[in-house]
Image (tube, rainbow, N blue to C red; front, side, top):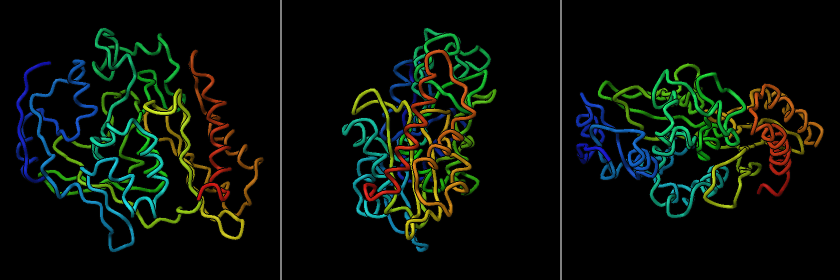
Length: 331
């Protein structure tokens, strides 16, 4: 591990001051950043410890009926919080499906949004070709083992996937990220926070230099009764998704009034199925309808030699998730 400076901040403003003018990174749980440092993937000049900024660990109700999750709220605390379990069970299920209990006890909401891909060619510096680590060097994955890689939204520069379960659920719930810098505050929908690779795969998010995530806001929820997070993986725990689906329906008198459908494990960011809501509105749930949506959702898929199975797997996962969400089993 390379030498670095370490500082501890007592508040957000102090953290921003400490980070000014250097290639600093903020650290809380460190469940991803420390691995990247030990592997030599990232070499920050300075780490700013923000774990003492206790105001960022709160989870509380907003005046508009929504919920604010502080950036330092632990994943385990968020998953088990009464407000989240009661009003946003989709998020609770997604969090509990991720990592292991030990990691969830350390990982934070802000860190989860900032975690980087688990592509083995990115994590292993022995592979010199990685546009995420060394822009312009190429993508070793394109010529390598592609079983866990993207089938949607990839580019000639990168076919890595985003590993977050939480992000998939948050996009389905129309979450908004609150960020702050020395110049003020701003917010953006989580659907726009993470980026597709294009020709700049080293940029994972639209977070600007000098900005820090302070919270994630959830609007008042309509999806308590009919929502599902379905994760298909190689083993029952501590495994990343091959394909995941966040499905949320608003059902009244057996008719779907609105819907959200977001895929994980298939792209560089959570992948909303844009046409799902319009196709589902005003319809009664049926297997034929769900299969039409699944076919459309994966129509643009571009699989590679080892992950063509993800196309059919994704379709079946979508049908299963929508079927569960539209039934009493989602409750």
